[in-house]
Amino acid sequence: MTLVQAETTAVRRPTAGKRRLGVPKTVLNGLSVLIGIGVWWGFAVSGFDIPAPPAVAERAVELIADGTLAEDAAASLVRVFTGFALGVLLAVPVGFLMGWYPPVRALVEPWIQFFRTIPPLAIIPLAIVLMGIEETPKIFVIFLASFLSCVIATLQGVVNVDRTLLNAARVLGAGDRVIFARVVIPASSPFILVGMRVGLGSSWATLVAAELIAAQQGLGYRMQSAQLYYDLPTIFVGLISIGVLGLAMDRLLLLAERRLTSWQETR
Amino acid sequence: MITIEHVRKVFPLQGSEFVALGDVDLELADNEFVTVVGPSGCGKTTLMNILAGLETPTSGRALVDGEPVTGPGPERGVIFQQYALFPWLTVRKNVEFGLRTAGVPRARRREIADRFIALVGLERFADALPKTLSGGMKQRVAIARAYAVGPSILLMDEPFGAVDAMTRVRLQEQLLTTWSQEKRTVVFVTHDVDEAVFLANRVIVMAADPGRVSEIIEVDLPYPRTEEIRLSAPFATLRNRVWSAVHRHEAPVR
Ligand SMILES: Nc1ncnc2c1ncn2[C@@H]1O[C@H](COP(=O)(O)OP(=O)(O)OP(=O)(O)O)[C@@H](O)[C@H]1O
Ligand SMILES: [Mg+2]
Image (cartoon, rainbow over all chains, first blue to last red; front, side, top):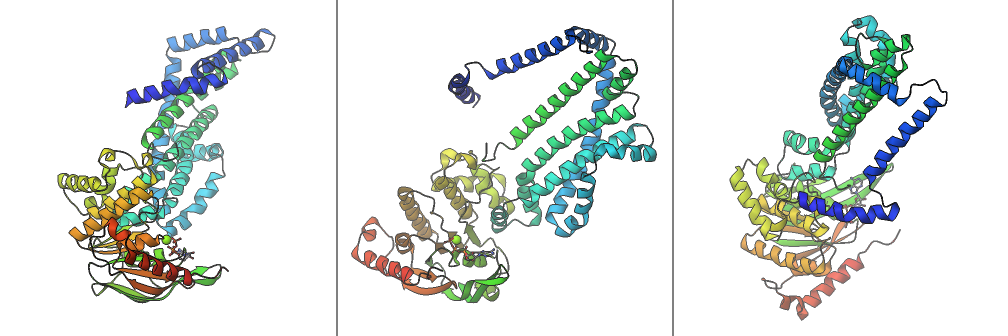
């Protein structure tokens, strides 16, 4: 299997790649990163008030060496994963119920649509007043962000299940429960996974912003306190870490999505 | 025995009503092979869905062995016009689906599934996902899946519609072979007049708007049906009769 795949990619790449530029995609990706850093360096030396890459790298090494970066990243990641996991765990059953029972949908959907229009960050003042300044309000906001995007996706998934598949299962003797477990869940899984990816993205963005407002630890907090001392290199390290971690999480979910939904026709 | 008593089916259509089936009366004997032909939209699928228990008639009723049909049942196997395979299951798992819901143990399930996969000639694709199969292969999986549960009635909605002419002939012969070995009642919808005559004891010709049975033509050709029969003069006569029956009743273009 892997051999066959390796062969097809090996065969495909020259024809697809050569016709355009003759350079493999990864080389171009790497080149693009280098050019980006070069441009950044250029701005730094030509009088813009930003730190040059070496200064930022130096600060990164310091923050890694004294463990601050790892601690901050861990604090942020724990918050994200807790809130995200809770959000998804609640969103999937709620989304299924809404899709399966129209009355449930009619009762719940107005609230979901309403809260969806409020940026999660706007909930922070209320959450802090009600829940204090500890972890709870931050996790709650993440929970809300991931719940809202995931519940809509699950609902979409259930509503979109092909009627003929439901009928096929019924004539093969499946009752409601079997249909649910063996048709509705797998059929809507692609939607759910997309919802999870969107949810994780908005969770991450929301969390970092939440940490800017109120936290004693975390990547957002580190940047916020660096701002007080005009410590630009630390802010840059924070920004880059946020981007890299966010990208890594997204890629991981994308990989899971590809794996779990490779049965789909459209790919 | 299948009895269809004054079945009407009316669908709402943009504020008014659309009569998909207007008063259909039919009686099918046990182990009969009946084909249904008629123009597109004459209610063939609707009739099948009513027999399958997936749709309820607006008035009238369908009975199987004297019992009114109220929902799907394992004694009625259905092969849908669209393949309706579960795309996330392999060919074998698709074929095993009905056996699993019936609680057949794993080893037995696999044995039965493999037998029917072989019957439709897909042994090499037993572990393939539906997306890697051609339309005709998918339809054969659907056939194997319906057979596997061992229904006494098979409702087949244009099962060979997407199959090439050669495979089609082979599947027709296979279908007749299995039918003569394990007799069951078959209701088989098709657009193909040749196919309708080749397979059936009786051809039911339907007309559209409102959907109704316009003619029933007995096919008194002997089984097993062979190539010879297909090329014979009585076959040609019957085919012409069915053909003109279909066209005579074709709905006027609105
Ligand atoms: N769920 C539905 N709602 C509204 N109208 C419907 C519905 N199902 C079928 N109809 C209508 O009933 C008529 C008969 O449909 P049906 O699918 O039974 O036709 P058919 O004979 O199977 O046609 P084909 O040969 O094209 O498959 C069609 O005109 C269709 O528009
Ligand atoms: Mg049809």
